[in-house]
Each structure stands twice: as C-alpha cells, then as structure tokens.
Length: 70
Image (cartoon, rainbow, N blue to C red; front, side):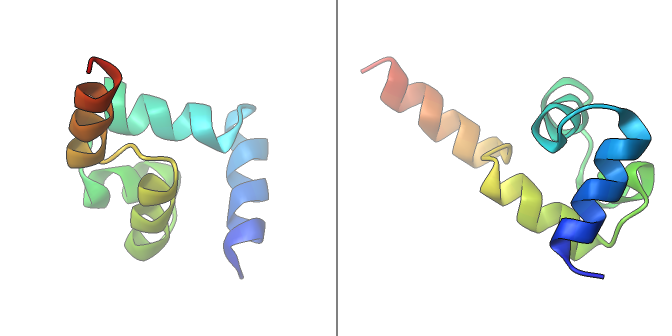
C-alpha cells in the first residue's frame, strides 16, 4: 500500500479528512508517533511523515506560533 491508500482507508474509517484526524491525535490528544500510529492502525513511519507534512510536530507548531506573533 502507498500513502494514498492509507489516507483513503483512514478517512473512510473516521469519516473526517486526514488533517482533522491528525490534528485531534497530535495537537488535542498529544499522542506520540507510536501511540498515534497504533490508534490509526498504520505504520509509525507513515504517521511521522504525515505529521511532518501537516506541521503538527511540537517544534514546528512552536515555530509557526512564534512567526505568527512577530
């Protein structure tokens, strides 16, 4: 399976967009890569790639907030 197959399967399972799902898992529930990947039922590497692409990593969000308030 590639990333698109994983994305479609997860979006169908949760009835939300991938960005909304990752926001809940990473920002609201503050799960790490292992916990998040287990909750979504995907490989940890896939979860890390998506989290990085949607900028939901802690350091990325801190940087975005600091740039926004300048």
